Length: 481
Image (tube, rainbow, N blue to C red; front, side):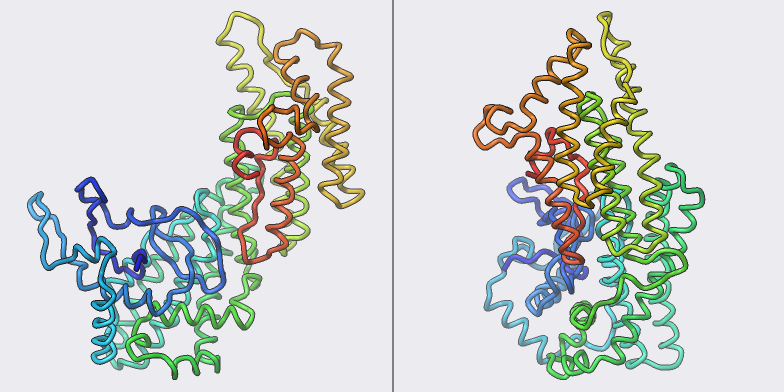
């Protein structure tokens, strides 16, 4: 059995395989991939949270088994102190018969009606959302909202009087801290990005929408828990100890709600929907990455730049029109792109000047913005006429190639001009682009990036939108292709 720690199950320290060193348990046995799925659960990793398959009975058994070792390793006076025998658990090599015996114990004794507040506190840590993990926004919200609904119901059913009020207050305090972490981290990163790119007041507006959206999502789960006949029937069929595992029941609640149409991410808020906000985060992260990598792998050829920006512009427009976004968010993305496009060109020209200043020989230190604009506007005009990104890109690429050829004789001998010609001569030719068997030509890499983007939108909520603004085929496109 090889299940990574869920619901606060891992002890605080772990033996690093083969090294004998003690490392934080939260950084071990973790995968970096992410695929959002309906009814996803949350699992800690380097980012402390990732979407995984739903929290099964097997996961719950492993979780509860591991809790007996949470305090088995501590640092006392600078030394590791071990109590009990956690090594098989840490090595993920607990014999099946031992796990089965523990399951039988749970079935006989149950978990009790008390809440594992330590596990809840642990699970609700590290809920920050920024450029590095914007795609996790709604997964995180679904997780905390469903857990909150299940915990609140348990408190109301199993306690009364002062004890009930204390328990509810404790849950509310945890939720308030977690919500504030989500809102602050999102607005300080994503909100600031949109402020920087021309949307005055974006930070406050997005924060208010997120706060309101979280409250509405919690209310949706609470209402569904009370009203769903299928969830009620599931509880009748579930073993007693699993009913007492709030993480397990929250996962079942998410699945049940998803099966009946889901906790709608289109729920109207004061300004933007939660789906809007996740999309805004993904878009800002992609723009930020492109700007940060400016000049590292990108061509400074004006025709290529115009084509790159046109592909990004078409993706932005298509996302706005087909991404199930509110009108407010459509306008925000499209307005932001125009400022991003200017910044993109400014940054590359600045880098060209800085690099040229380091050498005594003449180097390119400025861009012909008219040439960039000509390719960009032509390609965007083809797209506006047809609505077909691939068709518009093909026509724009041919126009860009022709424009380069017209200008080449006038610039023969200019720094980098022959390299640009070499690339344009092989832009549509797979066999001559690199000479490497199986290597796509530049046109194919662009096409694959566009196909992946369109496919991710068609898949809807089952996958993260793949903007792939690294559309030129340079370096990173070998990974995506």
